[in-house]
Length: 92
Image (cartoon, rainbow, N blue to C red; front, side):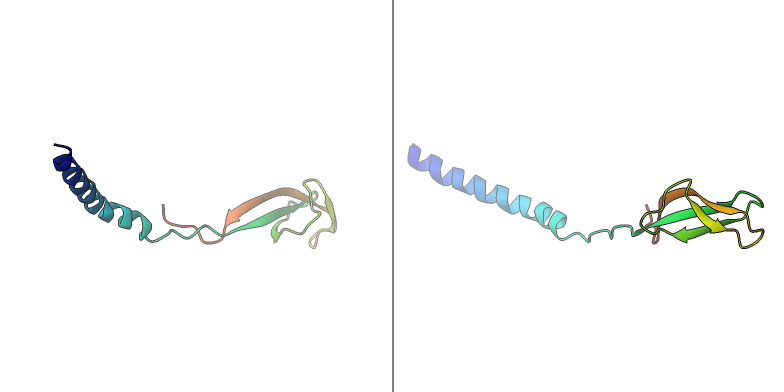
């Protein structure tokens, strides 16, 4: 009886592998979604006139830092916010 059990076990294993192959290939071969590209943005504003500007981040900047004179009124410009935003937002 053990001679009959071995071929049927091998047959069942082969059948399971054949049935599982399409599922494995679907997961492996699926197209990968591109990752979102992000950039760090700095929001700078004037204390006097309310002028605001978005700039690219430079190392060493921090929130509250004074950056010089406002181009409109000459008052101090300060960093109000630093955050990341998506450059190429993907469709969800």
